Length: 81
Image 1 (cartoon, rainbow, N blue to C red):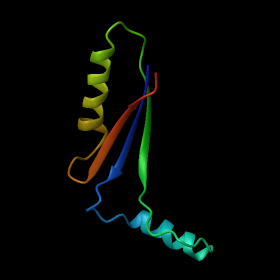
Image 2: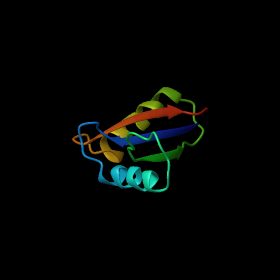
Image 3: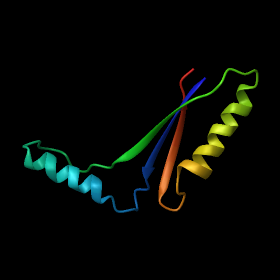
Image 4: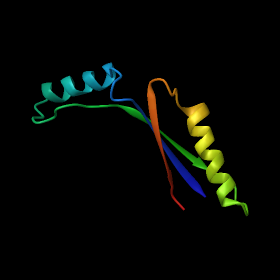
């Protein structure tokens, strides 16, 4: 089983890297870009095992407790197979 965890700053948190990217895009002539928010993606490969629900719970726990700072970040988990 493979999982992908998307981590991004909460909408209420300033994203200076995203703002820098947006300015760079405007400077290169890309019109119509209103905002850019940057984030992180983690691809996690799980060993084959009989208990898929436990593995899914573990990934949710890892995403919540280790991969994100819940004060400033949100996350989303996607299971790929």
